[in-house]
Length: 496
Ligand code: ADP
Image 1 (cartoon, rainbow, N blue to C red):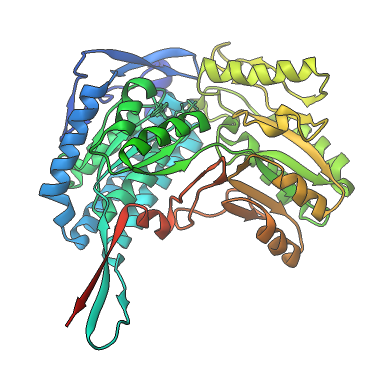
Image 2: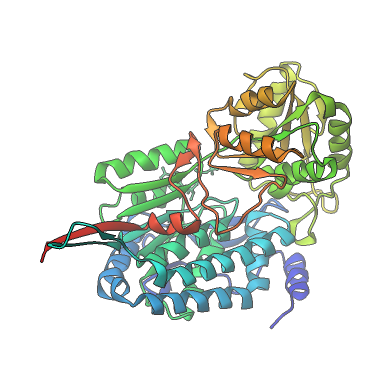
């Protein structure tokens, strides 16, 4: 097997990757789109096409859902939990065996630095391992109805679970949805983002190799309009997990409503990082840098609003700017500290925010412009950017930019910081840096967020439920709560 270094060197010199999946993955095999159409996948580090994939539509979605329904009813829902667990464990092991090539494919498709892609692949393996262990612990309750009755509950699989996946964390979002769905006994139809189709396809192939029966996990590629919308509207889909923008999530929820299909929505964020005067300054500096510049800020839970106590503000922001200016930029395969953004559209969107900010007279502390890979002059890059914010209603503070742009607000004290932090239409995550245990947990109680990170941004793992409040969505993925969203409770009460 080729080493990671060989794979990276070959991909850098050839601009592509051999043996990429061809077609949708339906009923255990690759198949071309019914229409015969294909689309290009683009390498953000170069801004050029590197491969083609199937451009699916309603006919392909219907074939995948039909396959999933058949496999669910014929095999998977009755496969013993312990056997489901063994298959998921084997999948985790195979992901780890193939980690080097998966990471290179993820890097080419998404643009992210290879080190981050490697972390995501390990995270995907971990998701399968975690839910493998949960399969045979999914047990119901008994109800105390008295001696003349027997009452108990069953966690039944919901049925066919659709996964609509974004481009910023392709393999990890696919894994965190597919693994619990399979663990619960559901069959899956996944629709990766049109910018990043390949690792979801590879995952479906790995699951087949691990022993998953054909048809239990299907993947249809294509655009949101052509393939995502018919999947969300399909009458034979019983559950939809959607991760993406508020606008697309709203469309998915409306389509689901027509069939009374359940949905879990993980949408946008504009997450605050509250840094108080008594914090460990180094830890806070590292945390704030990672919170906004990891994956070039293209993370729904990115810490994009720094709220820093006045006593710490001046030197702290200066140091952040100094560090931001020193970040290395480049093609993801060269493992820079900051990779490209995912698409030309995304780059234009970020630039639009900064151009409008300049027109309003907003002062940019550092960055604020498009740039390119210094080695090749190519790719869709945006400078690491820090902006002191004029007012809490400014669009830079209120809108999700989804790029390497950090806004800075100054708080007089912890209560003021809390008020600023909660002043958002989004409520996905919130970070706190403080040396006070009591204050940290008091703030954690009052922050409006699905999850709170204390003294380490992005703390936690697959064990910890994840999801949002307000316009960040509802429902929880990850953890045992994520598993339960693929189950429906059946209560049985009998007179005996
Ligand atoms: P972004 O705007 O950041 O590209 P989207 O929310 O549009 O994010 O995309 C997330 C996922 O949702 C992608 O797989 C995309 O193809 C899909 N998608 C987009 N629009 C719809 C829709 N109307 N119905 C179903 N899926 C959609």
